[in-house]
Amino acid sequence: MGLQTLDLAALAPFWFVFSLLSAFFHASRLTVTKHLSFSFSARALTLYVNLAGLVVTLPLILWHHDFPLHQPVYVGAVLLGGLISGLGGWALNVGIHRSDVSLVGPVMTLTPGFVVLIEWVVIGDLPGPPGLLGLGLLMAGAYVLSIRREQTAFWAPLRRLVTDPGSAFTLIAAFCFAAAATLGRVGIQMSDPLSFAVMVALVNPVILFLLFSLQDRRFYREAFPARLRQEAGPLLLLGLLFALMRIADQIALSLTLASYAMAVKRSAGLFSVLLGRWVYGEGHLLARLAGSLVMLAGLILLARS
Picture: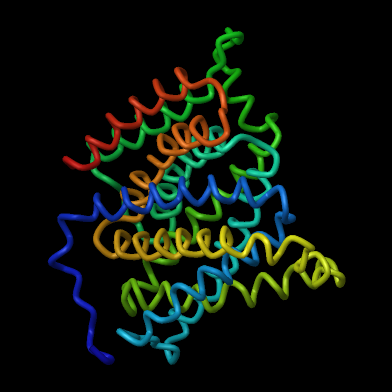
């Protein structure tokens, strides 16, 4: 295929499918991350997620590559997108360290709201009325997912977003991923989804290692824990899930508005509830499933818009 343009126009009707696949890979990734969080610090885990993702993603350049590094806008999108997505990954891992998978996943549902705001400010794009209603239902679903039986105050689920251990970091991650998605759309338009996924996979580990090393000169000790060899299998699985999520992300972003793609991806909250219950026995299943049904209504509206 060489340097010829990668044309995905024929896949445009399937943006919903790629976003849904990204959601499943994302929820599965959170589940594996929770397992690894018992052996790695959040910083070390963030670095290894990106390194493992690079190992899986890099061979894609043998099939196709288009890196317009002579264009400053593209380079800026790559570097800034890599930095922001890396910080988002670190914040997400901190959130997983401090909270349940079945809570972190639903909180990430707030990402589309940030995407809509950023897209409107930066590139002037807004979803139509059905799409906005679908986004609203996704936000309402996230609210219901956080409801507890013993709480009666209307604002309690909202307060939990900033008081529950890990939730504040998950909110930071949601904003970072929203910004990275918008930058990703710019980079994709100047190259293609697979090439941009490879480029970000190359940049992220370098930026993260430099950032964490500046933060702590002894980070290299933290990056090589005693259980590194024993956890090689789960790390590679995490890298595979991360790479598949990123590729599905980039393809979906090239086919529709970032707010639509990220909104569907946030159905990962539903997958996270089920996987958190199945793998770790996490509670509040009924409330979180009810919220997931509200989210599903939002997804149907998005698909029909």
